[in-house]
Length: 307
Figure 1: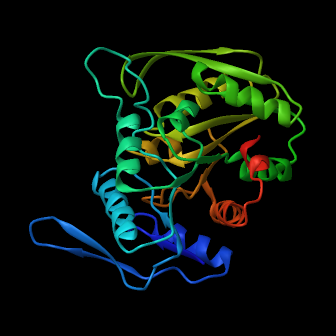
Figure 2: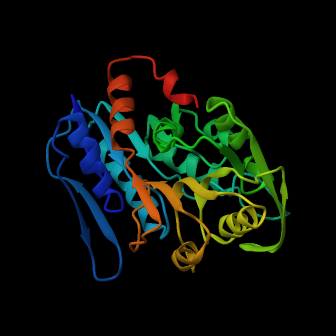
């Protein structure tokens, strides 16, 4: 028997997933204490059930701690299987040592989830594919392209061309381009410090094209809005962005509002902090519901791993 529960961070999405799965969202509460500590509790019997806990691990760290505590509570309540549905896997950008004496936080967080008792992880568009290897349990890593490509096809842009906002996303842009039978261009950037782009150049021709930038994360929106401005300066008809995880920190909303973008399409892995006319949100609920169904029925989900 399947039970879907949620942490506080992702309750809005968990409710949609449970509705798509055609079951009610499980009852759980978080009790907060005056010193800042909190306690998670399941308010229904989960003994022998297959539990799916939905929680994105965005900052603050309490969101990750809450997920760990819900996993531990499910283990102690004799759940049959404990699955973590993590729409946005926080600290995913810390997947390697990029300088001496730093933590590989992605690996540490994977270790913590395993220690808490998770038996499967379901997520979408990890920042780096190798993060799957940090876990010693199955990881179902699906792609937002299952949502984005049908939407892109509906836009029916005859002069479509894909673009990457940086060289790190070249593979993603190339894969989308192949799936849509079109070309792609690359924006080459140089940073002076984190979240600050010093120089950017465009590799490829966008004159007269409808350009779509694809990325996994928009954080401060500095890189992607600079890329949009550069693309329009080079003669593009229009420029859009498709991004899975709308972190949108700092001045992101202001930058997007003032940018050259016609539209910025994101998913609901992270809730928006404010409204913006240029931002369109597509839901991941049906995709996650489908993964849960296939996991539960021991069916193949390999088609959801492909762009």
